[in-house]
Image 1 (cartoon, rainbow, N blue to C red):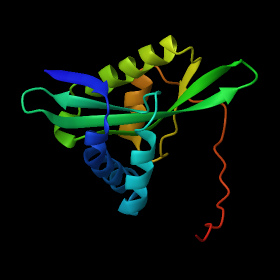
Image 2: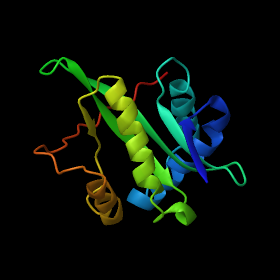
Image 3: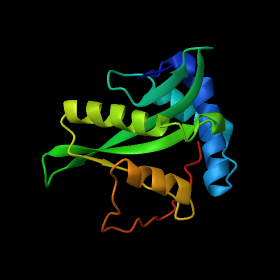
Amino acid sequence: MELIRHATSIDAPTIVQFIMEEAREAEALALDQSIVEKGVKSTLVGAVPRYWVVVNQADESIIASASIYTEWSDWNNANYWWLQSFYLVPSARGQGLAQRLLQQIANEAIEAGAIELRLYVHKDNQRASASYVKAGFDTAPYDILIRKLPQKIE
């Protein structure tokens, strides 16, 4: 059996590992682990949950994680919840855990007054896209545009 819970600082190393693996699998990227560690640790502090983990209760191992960030909509006077860093270890895939984790996050978003769950998925990640569609997501009428900025030197 699996337990879905909010992540704590103790979970940070596993979440970092999952984010590194997700980037490698989904986009063939090698992220700077020290930057990811700082990013995860900074979001595990505070009153609003930002990460969830799925724990295999048989051995207490973490087998999945996901995070959210919020975007305020002045058009709707409410938040959108954006999903990111959604990862399941390979042995946990295809068992309905992604759907359970997505539903748990959706339930908490509703309780918090959010009006939509949103996410972006790499255009070549068909398996993830299919899983999100199965969970009720639709293609949005938007393109994601980016503008890279120079890094601030500290």
